[in-house]
Image (cartoon, rainbow, N blue to C red; front, top):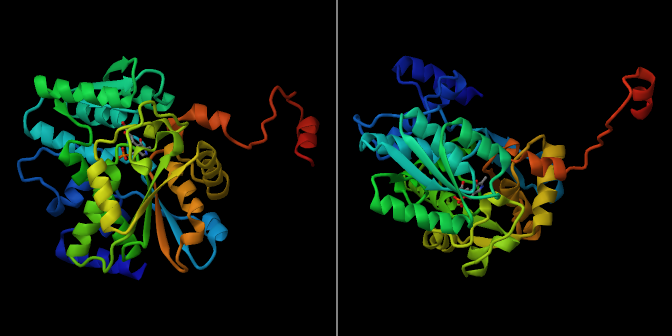
Length: 376
Ligand code: AN7
């Protein structure tokens, strides 16, 4: 608290608000302005922002109680970004750079969140947004977003991996900019989440637990942790703990999965485009990859909801499911951050089907009857 106050006083004296002060004053300008010295932008770059970033790091007391041993666990809740996922961190930069290059249309393949984010930022910048999605495998909330944000939606009979092949070819042949995580600006934007974690904790965590699909995010975090470490803003690097759904785990089993299957549709990806980078992050950080079953994902999803008050999407819960699966290996007193990549509202069907709630329907509007059901 005192640190925060001093920051604010200093910022008033110096007239350049610090990131802490901007967060405290609710004048956070979005992550490009907040981290401009760390990002490939210049004075001419038009900044397309929805004031993404500065998401909370929330202590997970119920998970800590399960693990014990003095272990501290936090969630980096990136589902609180403007379109409800971490993709906004990458998209603000990818779209700003596309705008700088006078591009008029962007394209992406998506399991849902990339399409929602690309649509929001591209339309805000006055560009066309083409999104290619696996028909029938995008959660309702994400599809709703793409439609409302004004994307041109192309639903294919095929999975994400096929969609990614198609958009890469289209971007090679035609004047449309690809905004999947093969676009390097995406990763630079996303690395800012690692900066924020170090700023919140005052140090890098011991473990970073993160779900992996196309493996852009784990690669971006690793870049961010390394940059802050080299700048002496932390004294250590975290071990990168990546998790995939068992039916969709090409990085865990080190082979392409032709027909990936999982309840976590966001990470239903069989041939991750950033696999080389992800393996480097794993090896250099002394980290490790592991698969979690859909059942373990759903258990963690429910636990986060009813014990922590945090509603994330199933893919995000894979980070907590994975951490619990690795419980015995956690060093005592370790500090751990689990990345919750997307908001639970993205996938209402999953929520309605997977909960332990008491739901009494078709009730008479009668006080006595209701009190009776309440056990009063
Ligand atoms: C909630 O939107 O690939 O390992 O097309 O939506 O960086 O791919 C989404 C991925 C984790 C995996 N959690 O991140 C897409 C897409 C959520 C996600 C991931 C995704 P990467």
